Image (cartoon, rainbow, N blue to C red; front, side, top):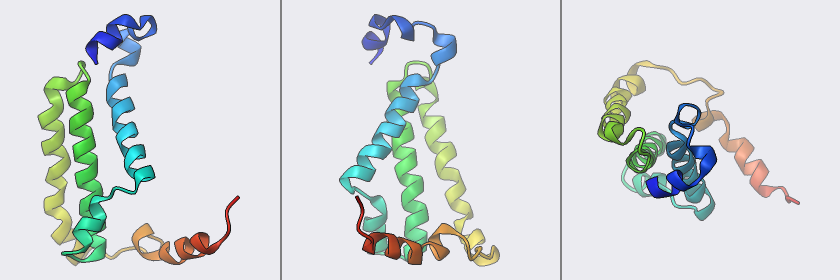
Length: 125
């Protein structure tokens, strides 16, 4: 990836475009996952509660995308493992949050299922 960056003139200004490769790769991975239907959540729902699987699946997918993107970005390659550890650490708070924090009725994991069902039944142009 570095040799491509060195050949593209407008990517030479590292001050303005620091982290460009990270952003490009990270969002690209998420889009590929979305459009291919690949989902860690589906795998996790087989063995756990659907809400928890969704939360953990999103975190793991993000951490994997972060690691790949950081490893390919020459500006933040040295931070890749720190990004992974920082991304995984909040998972230890899930049991506490599940036990003590009341979810809003407007939360996407609770309130939007009916809206999603309606949208899926509609004919799209």
